[in-house]
Image (cartoon, rainbow, N blue to C red; front, side, top):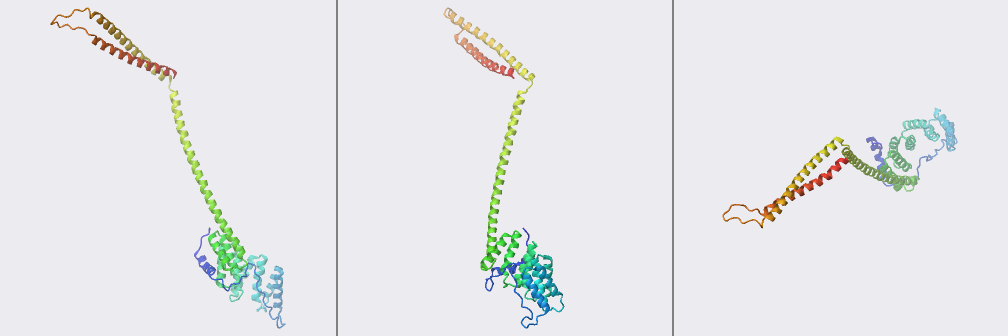
Length: 355
């Protein structure tokens, strides 16, 4: 997108103002290759036609028959004739058209500038201002073309070629990527000059611009969708990497646990066996105490009925079954705890050996 310059805007103001003005008094004609009006032959009515006038008429006929090089040479002969003062402006004008038709743009531009400079009051000047815009457009100098068409419309707002100038201005804007402005200009040609030969082309261009709008919107949506999908995929991959890293850490920990040294495993097993031996010793002691308590309890129960009653006032203590039962309960509790610990360490010792 090209930036708008202040001079360009000032030159385009007349174009836009005219585009919004009523189309009254505007001719429906106009086109990029509109044939200029044929000049009247100098002196033809009186029969005293000069040689330069004859050459001019011959050059115009050659131009009409598309013999452009011959026409250019003929007009050059008229311009070189010092006596052809009356025919010189027309010869210069037709030379510009012949150069344009022959595709000699540099020569056409030079001849056009010379005509505008030498004959600023000529009624042919607006035609050549329009042709300057067309020439610049053909050279792809679109901003210069816009300025040239704006100058033409400002100089001849009621000219037959105004619709064509507007159309080619829209084409220049379109080539510059300024779609909204181009759409407005094409709309102006359609609405203000409905009988112009450029209406159909302007309507076609406007539809193309609207299609471009839809394509851009679709592309924007597709781009957004693609970016969103990329974000989702990236988020998924990031989480997947996090999961893989966590899994790898867990696997390393498990591997490290499995790779413990045999010395550590033997040391743990030895400690467990020592504790087991201690528990077994304590269990044997508890079982001995329990057996002694049971024997004492049985002896007490057997001897109790035959025992003589103590004399009155005697301080002797008579053994009771209650004391023996208490010692028996304590011994059983110790045995139960010892058995539980024994079962625990017996379960642990094989696992340590397996490691």
